[in-house]
Image (tube, rainbow, N blue to C red; front, side, top):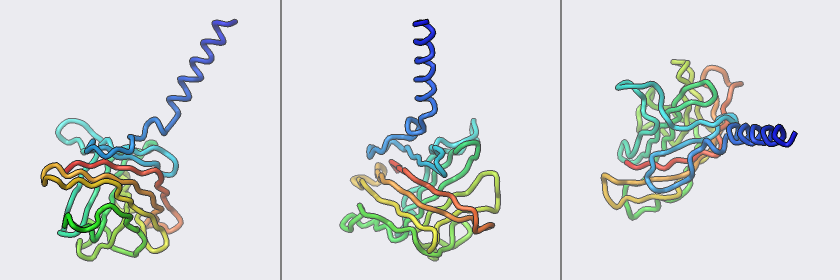
Length: 191
């Protein structure tokens, strides 16, 4: 009986650790680890890429772009869906004398890259499901969020490290009744 009880407890503990989504999110670091993750509608999404071989899509990409923007692309899965989560921060100063560690509000109607010209874009977050070529979930004036830059090291051009957290609600461009809620987002990007 004791052996059966021990076996049951061990199986229960193993199931708990396997089902604990927090264990799957990367730590919120600022070391340039090139990691990122969040919860999308409560399911863990980790920037781990997809595919294999030379055609494998990288988990995390982006960096400084368009003179005054910072762009982050996270590719991964939540549940059985693959997709790309994009964060675009307009007005991100590349001048080291300006304040970089601050919140960026995602609360404006704006076009979304790549279907827009970067100079027309305001700060936004978007999710592109890999199973739909046309559907995009993005923030707007009614579906808002925030990116908090928590760490910046611009000491060398080739070793720029930017880390932060994010959360937002985004709405489908095809059906305004469908939304995604992103929580517990974190990234640690070395460019």
